[in-house]
Length: 249
Length: 317
Image (tube, rainbow over all chains, first blue to last red; front, top):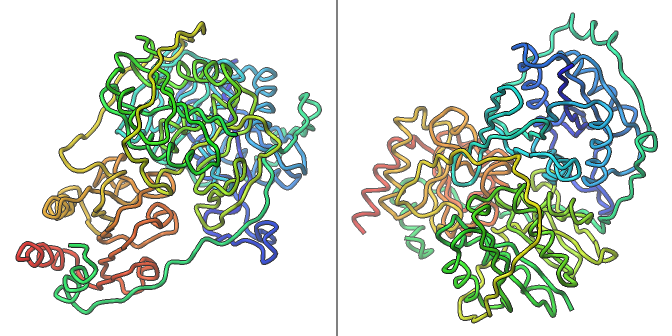
C-alpha cells in the first residue's frame, strides 16, 4: 500500500485580520472563521493528484489540535482524502512536539511521502516539516513548487531565494509545499455528504508516546507599530519634488 | 555570557549579506562571543570575509566536497556537531530560504526549540518576532533553555560593519553524512541589477502590469534609478516575474531606503515584506487601494502614463 500522509492544521482563516487581545495575553480569535492552513490545503491537493495519477493508493490526513479540528479534517476528506486521524489535545503544541507526533504517525502509517505546508499562517514558524525529517532521519524537500515521482525517488523543485532549485530525494521523505505548487480544488456538496462516512480516528498525544511541553513561553502579544499615512500627491511633478526634498533621488 | 554560533550563508563564491545581519543581531545580546561557521568547499575567501565582520571572535571552517551545495540534510548534522563542541547558548542562521530550510533540522537534531524570524532582542533569551503575517508581534522567552536555535529576520537588523580580524580555524568533524538527497540544478534568472534583499532602492510591480511583456516597464524604470526589482505575489503567480522576485510574507522581507510599488494593491501579506522600508511610494489607479494607507507618498493614476514621465523627470534632474 503506497500511502501519503498529509498534515492539516486548523488556523484562523486567511481573510480574517487578527489582532492581539487588549490585555496583551493572546490573540483575539474568538468567533473567527477557522480553515485549513492554506499551505496544507496545497499539500493535500498534491497528494490527491499523485493518487489520481495512480502513483499512490491512499491519502491519510492528520491534524493535531482541539476537538473542533474535526471540521477541517472533514473538509479534507471531502476534498478526497481516504481517512483522517485527529491527535486531539487542548495543549499548545509547538513545532518540535508536532514533529514528534508526526514521527509517531509516520512510524504507524508507513507513508512513502509526508506532505505539509511550508508554514502555518498563524505562528508562521516554518519548522515542523524540517524537524520531522530530522527526527525520522529522512530527506526533506522544503518550499516545493513541483513534485515528480519515479519509483523510489522524487524530483522536487524548490522555490529558493536564488531561483528554482531541483533536488533528487530518496523516498520515504518529507515534502513541504509552497504556494505555486497547485491550486486546490473546490469541495462539491455530494463530496461533503460522502466525507461524513469516511473514517476519522481520534487519538491522544499519549497514545503516540508524546506529552506536549511548550518550551517557548509567550510573554506578550502586541500590535505592530502602525505606519503613518503619508501624503497623496497630485501629479508626477509633485512626486519628484517630494522625492528630492526627502533626499531620495 | 552568551556563546553564539552563526552559520554563514554563501553561494560558494561570496558571503551572503544575511550573515552580517545575523552577526548584528548576535552583537545585540550582552556579553556575546560570536563564532561564525562556514561550511562549504574551497571557502577560504568566504571565511576571510566572515572574519572581517566586526563582532566576530572566531571563524570555523568545515571544508568538504560534500558541502559544495547547501543541502540541509548534509549541513544539519555538521552544524549540530559544531554546536555540541562547546557550551553554546544560541545557534543562529538567517531567515532566508537557506536558514529556514536548515535551522529547524538542526534544532531537532539538538532537541532544542527554535525561535523563527527574530526581529528584536530584549534579553539574551527573550526575543520579539512577527506572527499572523506581521499582524501581531509576540515576545517570547526561552530563558529556561540552555541552548536555543534562532533564525534572524534580516530586514530588522543593520549590517555588521567590517573591521574585525577574527582567527580562522579549520575544523574536522567525524559525522556520518546522509546521501539520500542529491543536488540536481539551480535555475536563476540572474541579472546585473542590485540584489533585492540588500538594495537601497527597490521598484516592485504588481498585477496591474498585466503581462510579462509589460512588466519590462518595471525593469526599465528600476534600471534608470539603479534599483533592484521586486514583484507582488499576484504578479509572480500570473507569470509576469520569476519567483525569486516575490516580496512579502512568503517571499522576501526587505528594508530598502526607497520602495516604489507600481500597481500593487497592498495586501497585508505584501506589506509585511516591506514594513521596514524607510520610504514607500505607491502608484496605483485605484484610489481605495490599501497600499495608500501605509505609503509615505502616493500618486493615483495610470502607471503606464506615470512611470515614463517619472523616469524622464528624474533623468532631467
